[in-house]
Image (tube, rainbow, N blue to C red):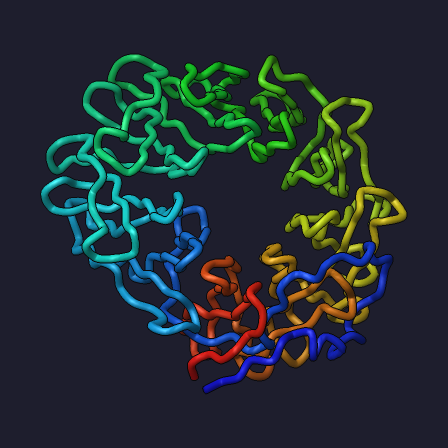
Length: 466
């Protein structure tokens, strides 16, 4: 049996790799990871067309689609029985495997196909007997092709096709009778292919609808009410990332075919208003009632820095010029941990490293210079889980490996190497489920697998299987 040591016993290690900064007031400590050794628990989850891992975290297990993508799996991590196949899906009419698993309550929804029904919506409770097709929306082998699966208010929303309405927005509670068309936004068989679903406050669901290839429309829907059109732009420019909810408001970016600038807009459910014009806008996370994002102030689009907006033009301003001049620090990987924003940036002196901000100039500073000097550790995949920041970084002699931070410079440490030496395990897709943090990584042989590190709030870490 392997006995886990709480991470708090080893936080002093590697403290010399980080640059101390102002610390937040003392708070009740979050549950600590059980040591620094992750264990292999299964094959690597597949990736979707957008590059995201096909996983669905739940309270009792992590569901995932394993490569080559023909089976739904579930794992409890380092606890027994560990990892197993819930159900296999032999190739159907399109030859595609299950995809887009998403948790809703204690079940997982996903798209899958069989030879008789084509590609339809499925649901699983984690058992083979409890894994079933929800409803045959397009009877026969054609299939309704569910996509853009999204949970809101304890229900599943998704885009699907049927012969009468084309591709429109549906919702489901997991039963055939509770799987219904939300609204036919463009009556007839053409459909609007809704996507980019985003949850706002008080049950609001925002999404984009595409009208006959000519217009992109931002829509807002409340439970039991018809969707309202908020903004319409020509499809050539479109509505770009991010769709970012901040309290009762939604920020989004509009582009125009003949305008080199993009427009940062905000809506509180009514007509959108312009809050800023930029050459580029990237990212977008909420913190303290404001939106934080990367943007360029000039037409050249090269001086990207950290900005924030309170939803007004006068309240949309640059937080700090980390790299004065035309180059810009190119901030990215924005992640909120507690009351602070963590992100990566390159100030031209330390390389691309980990930074932190409380929203003020003075409170925005280098958090950890993991590869000291001008070299870059290039942190990636920043993810806040269970009061800790998980990420990957590349340091001299270790390659790219997994790291964890409790929000202090001294408590920012590397997990044990999975690919020894300067070979990189390249960890990705950090997610919390069943009391453990899961991620995929290699071991230096070229094969990727699923790994788990217990982070258990109930007290002692106890033991874990070998």
